Image (cartoon, rainbow, N blue to C red; front, side, top):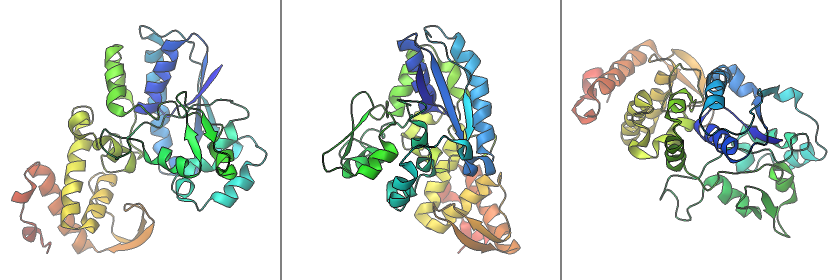
Length: 313
């Protein structure tokens, strides 16, 4: 039996298809329901994507393995793993762990589901000078290295706690980027699966283009322009707004997440990547919404929109 963490997104779905073509050994997909994804409604969208994808994947030409019904586990119901909690408590402020809530839990799965695979892909070509992604770079700094088969090894003086947290996971596509994933899916004749995959981490009916998950795909330039057209435009607007003022880009993120409406009053937001409070008056919201809608309407000619017309200094 092979185990895979499957969200229904591009990376994990590519990995699932790849595994199912390589061997007839059964595959058990695992999905963890984190409070963060459940509370914002993203878990429902990911589960919907899984339910839509699975019948098609099973019927695709070249699929050899039996793909079992996904096991969906609430974080609170994850199995106990000796030493994991203590290691996590000691390392929880380390950037790699602190920035990714999933790592407070995934390592608990590795005893019950040995060799469980995680679909974290390589960065876009040329994105980093060393050619490897942030996760692998961070692991290397702790003396932990991803091998060709995705397994992790630890240097003699490598961080033992971090190896306890990560060591049982297999990063099988850490050296495969999204362009290569798409090319493989098309080569296999699985293009019909791509529109069903869920990249976005919001509860919106479409990919937003401004969350961290979507923005990673947007770093591939025009690659995802036809796959995620609305997300692509939203991303371009956000990048333009960043060139004006980072705060406007954060407001635009909230605007997209609110299905093209901004909230009013005092709110707590993580649109900038960190949680903080802001206040938006009715007057300010009216001005910002007018400007943002004008930018969307004028895409890609953003410079032709006079923001002063909308009361934006």
